[in-house]
Length: 427
View 1 (cartoon, rainbow, N blue to C red):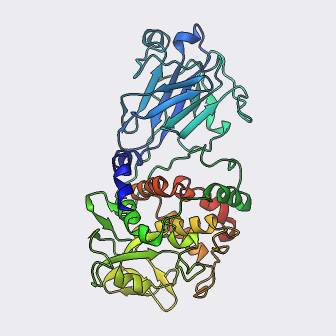
View 2: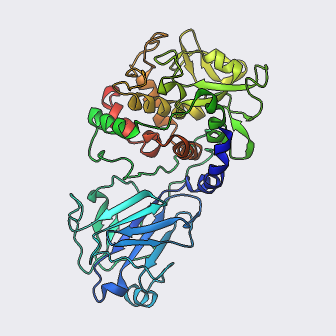
View 3: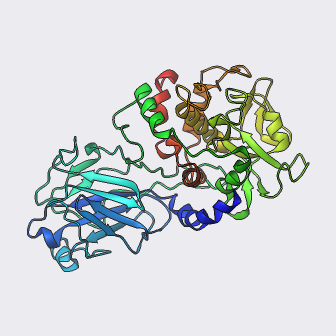
């Protein structure tokens, strides 16, 4: 397994910082008042607190694509224009990049922002895509806010040709996230990946997400060692991993199998494997979305207990608590734990062909040591809300996608927790 990681290292290090930002299309002038071939522009906004190199990014319409260059600052706009002089005459603004070759409103009726082959954002107009009825002649269309439902409701027609390079959008900065700490983070919507989810909630959304997440690349349990050494790598020390519950940075090489120390780390199943998938042949057993590095002794203390509030502080890691039938992790990763369990519930909805049963999160604890269940649902929802997505989770999600080829939707779109589980918990 080790041999595969050099293939991903350069990409991962490049994208680790970019994962902290969400780039969105923020304004488009697709039907210019004088000359579409010179006056059209596309504006991008960086909803993050880290500058992003635009190498590898592109804009596309149904007539072609255009590679971006340069960089976009934190909380800043980036304007891509067809012609610098025409843009300045029309708006009084200077473009960040010129020579855009897209046709936009002439032969192209949508604009997509891509990173490599991954679609990050899109906007359509004049019914080019079903539901996109927005229509603007001689005026720009502008994003209302950075929240992205990937629908026409995110957009409005401006009162004039637009105001490229400035606007009302503001960045939402995550903070202290690299070791599982707080911060709101900035999730990406990935509309092409999350197909057929628009407008859905409850069981309908759960089913749609299950269809997206199935069929991931399965690792062996032996390969998990190197996989989580990569996904849970300490951003401040690439020779170490961050332990989930203990929170400390631990040498990758100091692990069970190479050391008998109780302070070495091993592979913690956040959804306890005895709760539904004890056999390695079952996909959930080696699904790295819920496998994390953890201290041997602390892993043993947690055992296969459900998650809930309460208990006595654990002496070796007093930010965590436990009692006879439940485990409460440290506050900085409570949301992480919740989102991992929500992923498992959705990914293994209605079972799969590897023998993993239909996993469920009931609003009880304990659920039983062998039941294909983990609790406690409404506690987990509360943890999710109290500990939002942070940059460490986002980077981890991106790295898992490199290896396993599926994502945790509740990291990319945290609002889906309420959409699926909110009614049960009175939200």
